[in-house]
Amino acid sequence: MLPALTALLVSVMVFACSSSGVSPPTTARTDPTTAITEAPEALATTAPASTTELPAVPATSDQPEPTVAPAADIGIAAELVGRWEGVTRIVALGELPIAVAFELSGDNLLAAMDIQGGIGLELVNVSLDGRHIHFELESPFGQAVWDGEVRDGVIDGDFTQVEAQGIFRLERAGDPEPSRFRSEEVVFNNGEIVLAGELALPDGNGPHPAVVMISGSGDQTRNVDVAGFAVFAALAEELADIGIASLRYDDRGVGGSSGDGLQATIEDRAADVAAAVDLLISRDDIDAERIGLVGHSEGGMVAPLTASQSDSVAFVALLAAPAVPGPELLETQLELLELAGTPPDQIEQYQAIQRLVFEAIAAGDGWDDVEVAIRALAHQQLQELPEQSRGALGDLDEYLDVVVSQEMTGWQSPWFASTLQHDSAAAIAALDVPLLALFGELDTQVRAGPNASAVSAAIAASDVPSYAIGTVQRANHLFQAATTGSPDEYDLLRPEFAPEFLELLLGWLGDNVTK
Image (tube, rainbow, N blue to C red; front, top):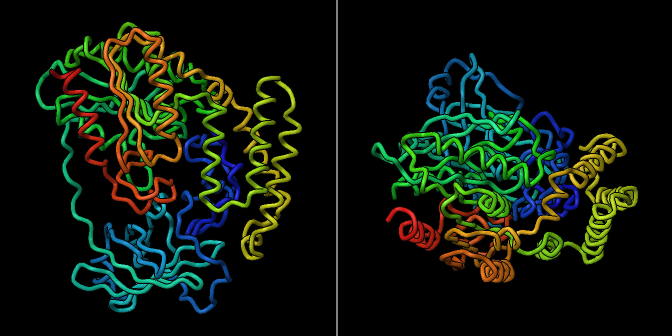
């Protein structure tokens, strides 16, 4: 629920920042369950912070200039065209998954990288000399440099960034595995809002049971891509395997959908979901009596609200869904700052800003005090940056104005106010359909204990005919097998669900939906 700036410089990127330099922040919504551990987009225009944090000193001046591939090297360059995937292993810091896509434009060898949640980041100083290849990723925190050799379908070599050293290895990516479901592009409307998505259909003519997938906060595409893990696309495949169709769609203002997520209240999001349910009801290949909702994170707050207002929803599955009051959720999320090593005095400042925001939302006044507090904290953190990093941001006064404006836009948005004030427990208590609630034991964003207890208490006051509440051992907020559960770890994990999560979810759906 936190707009991005309250995490300003809590953690610093290794590689982030595009080759064009640092761009102004956007007012895109950030996931409330991850925002407080991310650097603002204005500081790092590409990806959430990683645990792999390196010191910053000026990049050396002897790096190669961008080159045109010599004629003798064109054949080798042609071999490179396409996608390569692998890891960078950094001494004392571990592995970081990376992917590089090469293309030829005339005689120019171009490259882009996926790393730390950043997709398609432009690489610079790309050069090819025989079978020796060199490429870099610009960052105000020190140029990241890869030097390697191309041989037998492998690129491997050395990695350096400032004082950090390591090695890397890339292998040509194979053809993507064919999808395990039939898919169909769909478009539907909620009033003037156009929502675009994809319907995944199991084998056979149906009619099939179906679910609408509801994403968490943040500007999510239909697949909910997080650090290389397409969460909803992966879930759609698992559901199709047991005969359940699924509809997932782009959030407002993202992909093919219109509107503005910041201006959408949680009630607006519930209406979007209701429109998706109506679309499913209208189809002959969908069983209108077996349509349910699967909500993840904030989507798990939207799902009960939609279901409690509809006679067309047959079941609800909540995945890492907040059920405690919004202010309590935000207070527990401040623990992430402690895990990130944030100084206690800064944590106190975050808490003070939160209190001011809560008071301003409740009273409809007091936003000037919020802005003063945010500006003071942001200014302090900017001054604590290394000189090189500050220099990369340009005019600091202008930068500060833009960042504070972005933060205030998020705090004052209809989305944030409605989400903060939403009573999830009351929405769950109003349900009268089968309910599943799953949590990750290591989830540091929506804690399993208090939220599972809140769901249980709400069910006790409801007419829910059957339910199950479970905690997936050693799982994070995305239900991946994890070590710490921190969002900083996402880049280091396999992009797949923990087996226990799939057993619990698919088993419950099998017993309650497909049987």
